[in-house]
Image 1: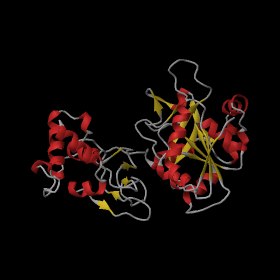
Image 2: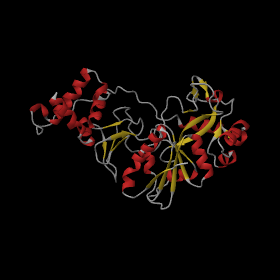
Image 3: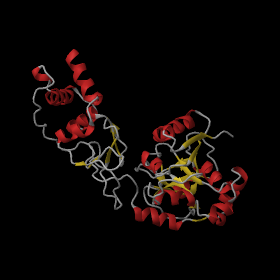
Image 4: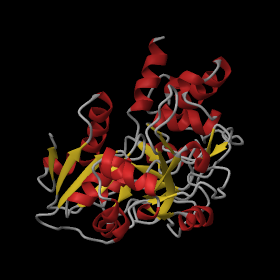
Length: 353
């Protein structure tokens, strides 16, 4: 047990790139302030950061200090030991059966030189990487289908029911939503792709007709969210729904000013205020009543890539709900900006109604 504790502790403190080299994973060298990248995710096998764009960066980013990694496609993350377990056996160490754990332990003990009783023993060549266990899956819906569904939607001012709901229930001016094309309405008779459904029924028939675009860190529309109008009346009905079978990590809602930030290279912009709201309707409320850059997040969508697009000199107003879920989102936003906040590059504020 003592030796086991030693190899686990030492692997958890090993640097990711050093271990990746021994595993034979292709590595992109560090550039600028990044810690480097890997061209092969051990969890989903993604090679590039974005599957359907010209982004040539490696799928897996390595933390600046070298001790952690995260895949920008499937959002898997971990340390050096997690990298070994996923690369060799397709799962993290706690999820493996005894045989798999033994394989990971054998590799790590030999690599650390512990089998000879001394950390300075020569390190052997890595074990061959087996065929991947996890089948890769697209992160976002097909771009052409997203564009076609968005084009099939109509302005919120053209649908009396949705317009009335926005104005009366949410105190959001439909004309302002339509003017900036922040959201549209899916017609009841619209034909939708298979991913635009819930429980086998298309969004157009379940009441999820208020459609909001989600953009990536470059400001490009990659997916859609659908909000039920009016609010659910039965237990178990979902207010909001994302495309079935696809993720939303690294995607946010953004008004025109926020999209400009995401697609521009602005290292510094003093006096800028960026609001980060939670959910579609709160985002719409902020975006239509304030001349600000307004980003909107939902569960699992905020990412370090999005945070990196906020220029130095900006103040980030975290306007998530004052509940446990909102606090969790606020903590995630804060964590991605904490280092820059400590350096005084950005300011963080928590909005209170």
